[in-house]
Amino acid sequence: MKKIFTILFVCLFTLTFNIVIYAQNHAAVWDSIKNATMLVVEPAFQNEFGNPYRQPLADYGWEDGLQISPDGLNLYALYSPSDLLSWQMYFVSHLSSPFCDLVGNMSYLRSYSQTYGMDLVTNPFGCDSFSNIDILYSHRTSITDNFTNWQLSGIARGGIIEGSPAPLFSETDPNLLDLFMFTGNNDIWQIKNTTRNPSGINSAVRLPSPINPVTNEFNADNAFLTRINSDSIILIYEKYTDPDLRDFTYTISDDTGSTWSNPVTITTINNSIGHIEHPCLYKDGSGQWWLYFSIDYTYIARAKQLITGNWDSWDTPQMIISKGNSPSIGEPTVTANGDISFSVSYMNTVINDTNDVYDLDPWILPKTVTANIHESEQLKFIAVSPNPFSESTVLKVNKHLNNANLHVFNSEGKLVRSMNGISGETMTFHCENLPNGLYFIMIIENDQIITSRKVIISK
Image (cartoon, rainbow, N blue to C red; front, side, top):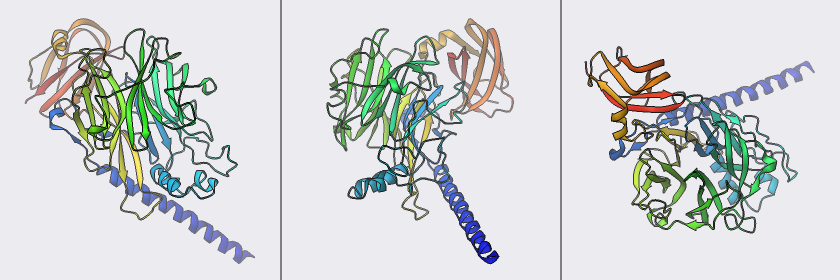
């Protein structure tokens, strides 16, 4: 009997050891692949943006449907702790299999990814497990901090796949949302008057036809919300013709989401330029509207609105950043400062494991000159003298600062120096230990960007 227990112990230990080694090996391979990923900022935008980088909270799970809040302090994602793309391809190619073998298939679940407390058991089908997909949320206290941790959203549910989170923040309280939209049960839904980590799933309302179809079909996705004036909200989203063909469609609400206008299909940006996805509207510091989106999973692009207030009047798209050596890129949303949050995919060709082939992470492309204040206005708000400088320079702001912060970014968009608790109208910046080059000084007061300027260190 003792010998049998010894054998069982050795087998159990060996199995556990092998699982740990498996996870370590796969995680190490993914780290290597992600560290070697290089994207390409188009030459026309290399002075406008720094180097793109992967967000530190990027997990080994699948982070999709990204949206960043306009103030840059909140990040949302659809999440699956598995190789979601391989699972979807398996699902589609095995539709004749028993249903629980499909929705309850845990072979694509990554043992080395986080689940954040997701419910992978509850389901309405009587299956032993459920390959759940839900919404994660992250918050940072300053735009100079990193997003470091995900948490399961306040509307997460077992047995109901949810994704494509889209917040509309209150104009008076940065902790509250006037609306929160998401996809669930094959349609776009909304919750009114909730918190930045949304709650109140029981109050969610399905958007009416023709935004969603009369029947329960999945043909509307990836909603984006923003205000176009003090009274009106615009919702722009994808409308599917078939799984591989979609249009951008918009609708407007003048009563904070209680009713919506008849949806209109955008014609000036369409599939003649390639496979388009993930529309996002952005208003820069000069009042100019832009439409950001992805093309052919290869580029993130933007198009300028030609006629003010006409949401089907867009100029020729400008390619901003391409996928480089990654398989794909997409899902742009833009902060008020002009930073672009987006996703990047990877493919594992090192380890021969058909259950562990693809991953998706959140990245960011930092704006090196703030979009919150037009360039002509920046010159009025701040003077830098001397510039270039070798040791120090004096900054003069055309307002009295109260407990403001000064942040210095290098040409790659990385924070290299900070000064806190600044008051008054002038300050001296010393550049000791910083190498020669181009830098961007940003002044923030009460979490609002006051101004930013380019400076040159030349010793």
